Image (cartoon, rainbow, N blue to C red; front, side, top):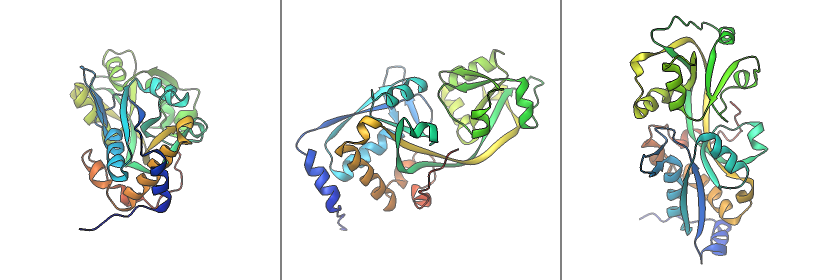
Length: 265
């Protein structure tokens, strides 16, 4: 049996708080397939699986408390320090002012931001400028790509969830919904949306999309947070996170472990 040895630094950190359990409050929004909030309130998701794996590997005694919330409320809570951790966040300079990101990213998608319209509509979007005449549903508090995020001339309709976005689209109250191509159709299936009634327009924006664990500024400075950071990186380097993300049909974390330069999509 191959033994795993922890660094002296990590052992010291663990010794500081091994005698008592701490609670980590984790903000989780309903974002299938990566996080799901059941009707009965039960919460499951990749960020919870990762924290459980970190806990088992490092031997850190902490309780994981999932806090279900709409995405925009989750973002507000972590920025204000009301929760400790949130997962799947795209790193941007604006967000770095409010929260701290953990390396490496555990989600890496080589995908496109696409726009959905109703199948029976005559809406055509061939290039970016065609977006200016459209009402576009966007996740409140979400980020996509710089040109789109920073464009104040676009008619963006903020919504609390993808389900609301597609509901508005099907009712004709918006013209388009922006989504990540690799995950949108899976999400629509989980949400029970009629995919056959939707179409992707021609225009799209392709780029790597990285999703990170993030910590509140208040929690990030604690010894527990530092132990999680160290263990997270060790698990990625040893390819032990690959099996965790594989359940969610994500590429291995080890494939981009060397890509530690912050990406700002």
